[in-house]
Amino acid sequence: MIFFPSNVKLLSTPRLLEGGSSKGSFDNFNLALHVNDEKVAVLANRALLLSHYKLPSVPIWINQTHSNISVDADSLSSIVDADASYSKKFGTVCGVLTADCLPVFVCNKEGTAVGVAHAGWRGLADGIIESLIESFGCNGEDLMVHLGPAISQLSFEVGKEVRSQYLSKNKNFEDCFSCLNNKYYLDLYEAARVALKSLGISSISGGDRCTYKESDQYFSYRRDGKRSGRMAHLIWMERD
Image (tube, rainbow, N blue to C red; front, side, top):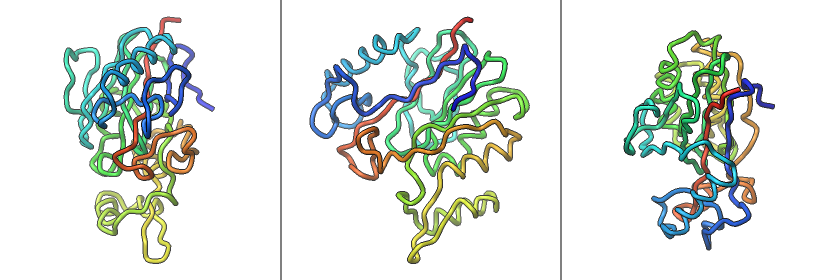
């Protein structure tokens, strides 16, 4: 369950939507322009996204680079390099695209500020969550977070250098890794919770899906490689 204020709306799109235009491995509701899908199909899907979900405005897209950069969506007039965006205006739709990475939705309890981050293992280790939270300019106890669909731990093998990078930042990340047959597996959901709790945030929901295993619901880069499409994760505020 998501317990955000009633005027805060968030959305994670499905892999398939009636009327979707993408074909082949991108079937049928891919929303990314950078994955070698037909541009006309992606633009048709983005138009369908706007109409089907009755969005208040065209989503503010960012060029995701696995960074720790968070930007003010209300001030953007073109696409910039970033991995999180936030808004304090009604009707601005913040968006990220994923296919295994973790979408992190954030709002304050008053429903006057929202944001979303694209948190892959690199961005999460480098502080993308901390960067987005800092943008809100308030105490962690005043914020609420929902963890959208991402790859689950047992499907996400990583190298030992990834584990070392996490532990060098925060020893509390140790419990986010499991070891099986000398291979490490990272729990992105738990790593996000570690980061959020270190910021004083305790109101956290979600974190129980797997983009890799649920192929009927989600795109997955780890499963499908370069043939994978992308889901959109959007958050915005409406007037009560």
